[in-house]
Length: 342
Ligand SMILES: Nc1ncnc2c1ncn2[C@@H]1O[C@H](COP(=O)(O)OP(=O)(O)OP(=O)(O)O)[C@@H](O)[C@H]1O
Ligand code: SF4
Ligand SMILES: [Mg+2]
Image 1 (cartoon, protein in one colour):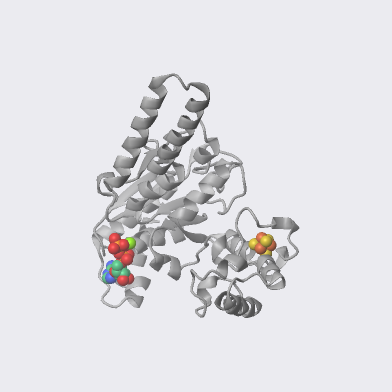
Image 2: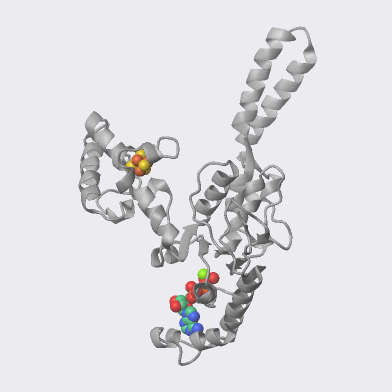
């Protein structure tokens, strides 16, 4: 593998032939070799290198040369636009809900009705159903809400349009692809779904690579954190007051505490301080060394990181089904350090 990498990144290699002003960069080759070793050894690796170093090729080349299936999770659109990308279901037209909305004449207003007609015309000719291909209807147009599905309202296998469903088609292509690019949100949404024993969004894989890894703590906190807002505290004070009036009318203490809680929450909101308190639940914390989430509450969240070795030593893709060895995980970024995660 080392020789193959040296050939790809070398002065006479395919990258030099394609990229104008290509220079052999020893740091880039060094990173590529470390990534290859991490994949080979089923290890976790964190790479931090300055912006513009060429980290993308440094992880892509060994990933493509490895025999297994790779998921790359990234925070930027650039890579997602260049490679095969699996997006969330809200990005694809849903035949079923589009047809229902058209039949029921649901669009509120002429603009939404016109947009829905445009989406219907698009749905007849598009191969992917990806809404980013329809420039005439803005991605945030209300009509999309009537022409896409959610996890709750998708009929799945009992849908009359299941066979030509765009969401399912995208997933089938992702299953067949050697390399799937997702964003961090979709990656963690998949972990949560598996955690809850629901469906799986992403295919099983041998290797996970996180680009723009400095964004991970924030995204993981969104999915695994718990949020407490001042609004909730004010609501709690209101409910507690009502209960206290019913059951503890003559006791001064509950009323005093409730008033203090209500005042503290309102003062905090007025002062413009951050209204939400986010905490990370235990299973969002990577276990040192393996990067596997530590959790007794979410066994499958831990299992998603793992792959079972086969008798011949080749790694089987990781899935919820079996788990013994950690999947190689590469974290790449120019600011991986947790203390600089903004
Ligand atoms: N060895 C090289 N010589 C010249 N150009 C290169 C080389 N490797 C990559 N590039 C080019 O450099 C640019 C930056 O590469 P890349 O996006 O991978 O950087 P990065 O390290 O990921 O930076 P960032 O931290 O900003 O994401 C790209 O246009 C890429 O084509
Ligand atoms: S399977 Fe779900 S997403 Fe696909 S067309 Fe049916 S309802 Fe829409
Ligand atoms: Mg980059």
